[in-house]
Image (cartoon, rainbow, N blue to C red; front, side, top):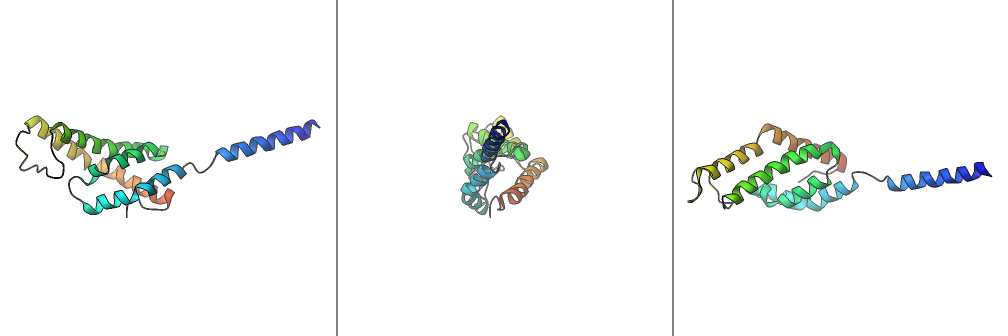
Length: 147
């Protein structure tokens, strides 16, 4: 009788554990698919504000990212956030900002902050992190980050 009760208890425990252990990437991949159109449109549009226009989507993906790419998401999104903040602090429209002909009223410190943030965004470490994210999304989710 005790052996049977132990067996039933073990079966219930195994059932509970398996019921809670679904695909750890499922929620992440769902978010990737939710944001894929916006990311694709931003990349296709190009321009200086392409990544800035999808910053909320990138932040959402960073929050959902599995541990194996969390650092890479932080690298990429952190750099986009820094550029966004530098442009906002200078009260500059990212779509029309021209480094060679900055708008009136922008001071040297603001220009340096924008230039620095833009350089960090295109550094090899940030581009490599984005490449790692794209590879991971393709491998784990079976779809590209953007098309």
